[in-house]
Amino acid sequence: MTITLKNKKLEACIKVNGAELISVKNPDGLEYIWQADPDHWKRHAPILFPVVGRLQNDEYNYNGNIYKMYQHGFARDSDFEVINANDSQAILLLKSNPEIKKIYPFNFKLFITYTLVDDTIRVNMVVKNEDEHSMYFSIGAHPGFKVPLEPEKENYTDYHVSANPAKSYGLIKLDENGLTTSNENNFDKESNDISISHDLFSGDAKIFDLGTNNKTSFNLYSTKSKHGAEVTAYDNQYFGLWSTYPKKSDFVCIEPWWGIADSENSTGFIKDKKDISRLRCGDEFSANFDIRFF
Image 1 (cartoon, helix red, strand yellow):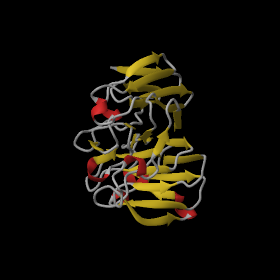
Image 2 (cartoon, rainbow, N blue to C red):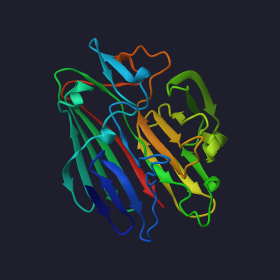
Image 3 (cartoon, one colour):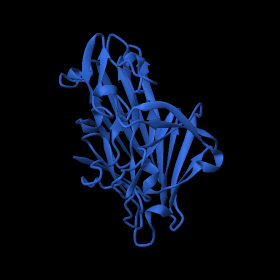
Image 4 (cartoon, rainbow, N blue to C red):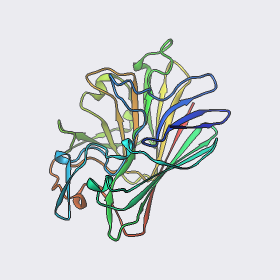
């Protein structure tokens, strides 16, 4: 089942399974979202919950019990409920159930709201703790954009990503198991305009540590056409850039994260996970980002 949002600037489709944005087109029919070719990457723009990235050994320890949890969590493959849907907004809900509690033993509600405003899709992700104890989680998004958007007039390497604010960001590295390492480089201010190439992703995702920014934008644009997309996130700690390697695929993901993969020195206890969010009983957490299409 899909939901369609539509105005004079954009038409967007959202898949209820995974609450995933699967298509965004302008009035000329230009598709911005990667169309999930399974020979390259079978997803479009998954929601990441309750972990971002990979856990050490794909498992975690909570209250002495070991739970299996694969990369980026289960929300991306879960069936959401449709709470409300019209031309401008869709609200979807995932809540704990007996099957989920086998791998994530917390009572929660996860609301994903898409709101279409002019040339922008605003995304609000709300986690509510309905348990008697604190819950631990991370959340993020993984939108993939077609690159090039107009293959008849441009190439993959005609694209760039620029960050705003333009400053030196920490660059976190992943090891061969997808875990963060203690090695961190900096992107200089001049390097915030990043040239896109397939080789850029030879070491897996580029993960930027944003520091204390309360608003950061990553802008994907072409030197050969006027079209692209800008992702703006609020109060997130990380942005990821990713595409497949060594397989050469025609997309780039720009990913706002409120959390990150386990470190190479992880203890395995979820409460000790790097940048994990702890939500007290009855509280809620809100994460917000916008995607502007041009």
